[in-house]
Amino acid sequence: MVYRIEFIKRAAKELKALPLDIQLQLKPKIDALAENPRPPGVIKLEGEDNAYRLRVRDYRLVYEIYDDRLVISVVRVGHRREVYRRL
Image (cartoon, rainbow, N blue to C red; front, side, top):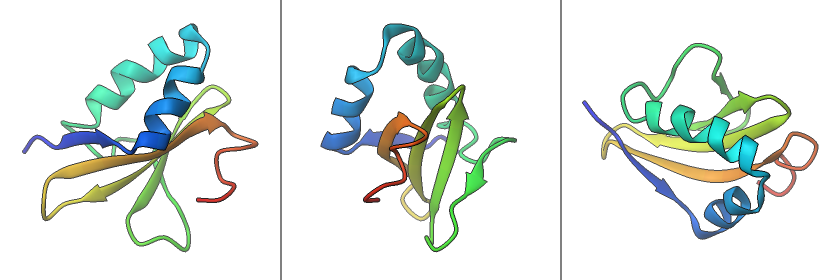
């Protein structure tokens, strides 16, 4: 099963605003989610039905998994001190 990865508009904009070295570190991890949406090190967010977070250095990628449609929706991308605000 291969999942399709979608970015909401806000998350795509946040990713483009990150420093290039962080973008280059996030890209392979995001691509790997298509094969395994729950890899080791990924944490399920409390209080959310299907939201998970992926950590890369001080940056976080928050995404939702929809197993019935085989879709991963990236919701937020940013520094750890800011990414959990206004989810």
